[in-house]
Image (tube, rainbow over all chains, first blue to last red; front, side, top):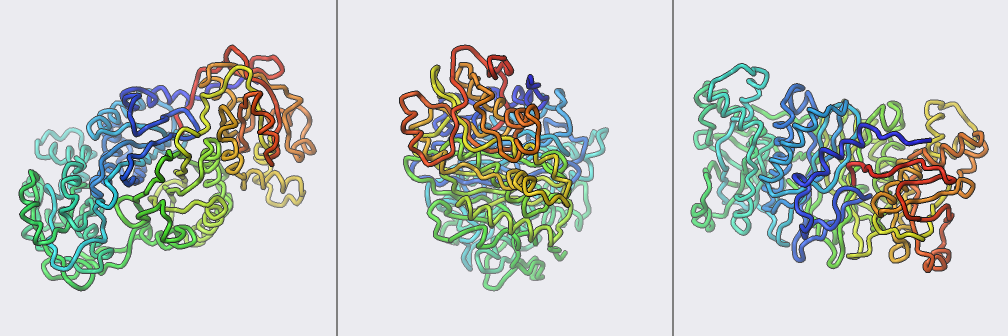
Length: 319
Length: 319
């Protein structure tokens, strides 16, 4: 009746490590990996922000994606949800489903995950590894002073609409993911945008008390503005000539394709947000690359150059 | 450029419902489904207990499992981790990966989930639905007064070892899952144990301040006692004749098979725990079905009838 050590038990060796778990005296984590639950000690007078995202092989990323980059991207897309709430990232759990426990793959994935975790100031405090088709589910935890979170439902008629960074790069990168031999530095910029989206944590925190509503651009600019419009009960008008397009997209694509990538392509993980006119001077004093692209009006849905392109009213099942 | 509503957006209709989200004035949930993150308002002077479990089709459950029962089981196995910490269940998120958005399947799954959620006093406050091979990842959140959680690392030499309930039923049920025509009431009891494990929430809470260490029996009695032994730095001796075997297992199986199911079969979700001799009177005054099966001693690993069957020293990557 001796109990064999399964290969999946051994996975602990890749994840139950200081590079991912961080310091033992982290005041937020009272008990980490290795018990029935992790125990967190929330900071008084703060709310806990929680979000989960699953990436499935062949659906959300190509089957042959380098595991180190996949790990970075998996964590960044979840951390981006914390950015959109103005929360400070604290930690995460990982539910990893793998067809086999391949040690080269696991070592590379764990090293990418550790790099991203250190970049975003989060520690891994738990998870689950299971056998099955490759899928990665990351649940992130952040904190925000009670009442200061940036929500989707706070926009008001008359607010200006802004976006951070430059859009469309990650979407156009999809055309090049399989093309490993491509040496074009413009393509390299796109792949960087896709694999290493830089979640706008510092911007989100700076927008506390400034923005009336915010969302991260994971589904595409217009679809995500649709979430704000729907939850805030208003319409949002966007002017296409104001949208900041990623320079590599402008260089590599014709005008229609570039606009489509910047407005409908997801995966950029910049923030779109609304700001009352009275707060615009405060906003423009912040050290971020921000562009005003539109305005909140009465009505419903999202309009691009006065064309109604989203009727609003639906929502994802998500946080 | 009109944006089509994907079938996966429609999944919100099954999960973003009062039967799962609970009352709007839940003090623990400041913001539920529909934003970038959920916002939780932790209770002062409490720790947050968090655990995640993924169930993969064909690995953790048969492909043709009734979705209503699958939903119940998915939530119960995660809630059981809260029970093992002595935590009070508060809420959960659901990361659901589905090959297709089949409305009959979803309606049945959601109704089972709502039933289990009400049974355990938890509400669904967020999640993610993705397309891919069927897998269900449930992350549960509970609270426990700071410092009172039942951990795996608190057992001491001389402590008595107890187990709740009767063991082996869910494991033997695996032999009958495909046999839909079976009308034997004994088999029905086993299937009930498998599909509707009753996470020992009330027992876990009653063990605060009484038990020195606890674990839920998900990997099998001896393997899970091995986690306590390893984390507490001692050995655990168990006597096979003391182990409470599920009566349907005793009736349907020969003695060896019954003992194997009760000691090595996972999936029972009872609690195994250690209690100092001085607290045994307090323990026996509690209104639960509990059995003393062994003792904590010096050394390492787990012994059954003085045979060393687990050397200890490994651990899962999990919480």
